[in-house]
Length: 179
Image (cartoon, rainbow, N blue to C red; front, side, top):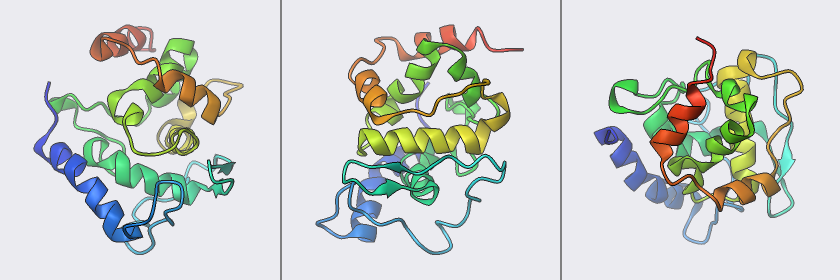
């Protein structure tokens, strides 16, 4: 299925928004978190299971606030601010489902190999932090016991080897989810 018009528009506007927010010389590694009412629309981690800050490529910690801001900039245009997606347009919900992907290595890899994640203009460390934040924010109860947070190294490895059939890979992984 094709992306919603809002998703397509978001994909076009995100780079422009980042440029406006951070200036022409900013990069994904050096941009400061967005402040103000839009950045504060989501609670940091209402489930009480806050992910830990991890260092980015520039050596600075990627805090949960920064991870949430990255989600708002790179993911919410399609997956919505609350992670509910647009299933009627082929954009899956993240709510109550992301943790199930952690049950298998293929599922774990898929979350950072999906086109939106893989092609986001952020570092591997930022994608790891964003994914860890989203897992705790939208699906903490579905995380398996002993869940290990994503690392920049594993994200780099999996980003470099995406599945050829994204929809088929997701369907095969999701077939093993609890009903």
